[in-house]
Image 1 (cartoon, rainbow, N blue to C red):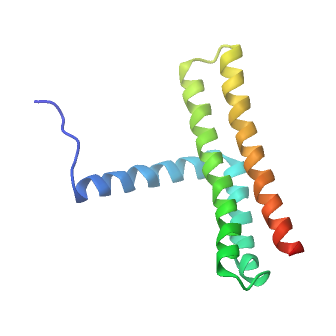
Image 2 (cartoon, helix red, strand yellow):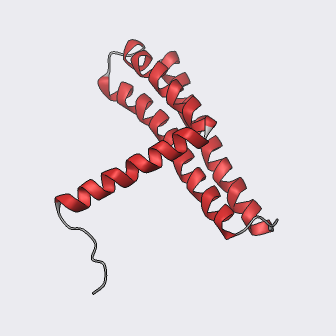
Amino acid sequence: MANKAPKGHKRLLAAWQNSMAGLKSIWQSEEAFRQECYVLLACTPLAFWITDNPFISAVLIASLLLVLLTEILNTAIEAAIDRIGPERNDLSRLAKDLGSLAVLVSCFMAGLLWIAAFIA
């Protein structure tokens, strides 16, 4: 009989364990992810200090979480490409470059929101 996927609370527990394994892996292997986490930790109190509006604070924090999310997806793309093979390939380079661009765009977006919050 084939291995059945867990259901109910067992599925949630398995998903949690997989997510924590991913967090451990990216924390150990990606300096950019660690730096972005430090920025999030440092800026979270600042988000509440620069505005009295809890929605604006949430948007500022969410913009930094989006940078983390994009970094996670970029790392996943890089891992998948590296799994295919180490040889140089234009499509592999393009996939990695576009993942990197996505991180850069998310950083610009977060920066724009934070600058707007400081100015407002």
